[in-house]
Length: 240
Image (cartoon, rainbow, N blue to C red; front, side, top):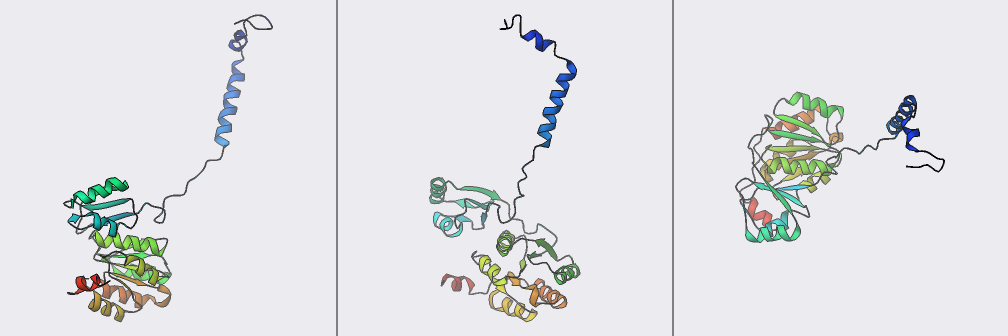
């Protein structure tokens, strides 16, 4: 290609000094390496997409409307049946669902401590409780409540203890699920009462009000129970 100055302008590029080219490439690489890298925060229990688990054997549209609570995703048991009305609702609202196998025992521990407020007495109590308990650290009462609902509904744990500075909020959020019977406890006698009256499968406690020994005793008492709803629980819950 002719150049306005005469001759072929590409010949100049073909004769460019090799050292100059290497310097240009090095400068470009250095510029890109020096550019700041945007780091996205890791997904937490608070930002994670909520997934409702339905353990019923027959899933109807009315059941979905009642229990998914605005979630866009839900899970059902391996042999559950989706009725035509449920499938219509799923299609109309663009819901996503999957089947899961409900395991009776997923871990050697049978009780879970969902800890939001992890004081020294909490950690010492957990260390002394042994293999019946597993500890998970959470960021908020809401995330602890969601974990409790999932763990109990799936049959992964017989019961869950939420340790939080806001135990009433955690219990209230967990009780939104019809499968949960959550209550606030302050000492071991409360556990006995809760088991007798409602077969509590989730307890919530504030570690600020309980010493290490008392907490250990309380959790031990809870783990020796077999949380079962009272005989009239089904009828009583329908009143609300």
